[in-house]
Image (cartoon, rainbow, N blue to C red; front, side):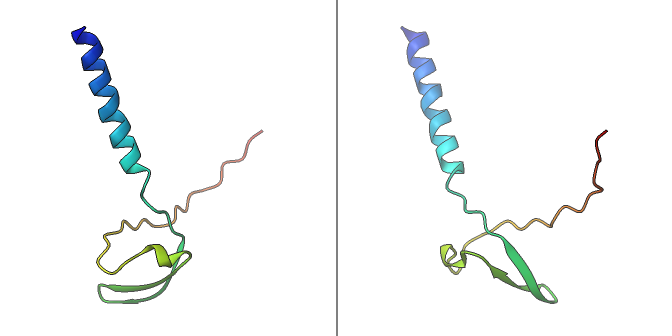
Amino acid sequence: MKKGIVSLAMALVFAFCTAGAGYAAKLKCTVDAVDGDKVTMTCEKADKLAPGDKIKVSTAKKGAAVEGC
């Protein structure tokens, strides 16, 4: 009985954690200007953002193309 309760509790915690991660919005943006530590960007679907929202910005990956045989 205890194993069933523990496994149910762990499943609920996992479900809540993965559901919270699914709410993050992904936007495609283009950098327009850089002035010191201020960056101006133009983003698609920017209406999903609000003033004061914390966002994570990553640079575009520029790697060498790998060709197959």
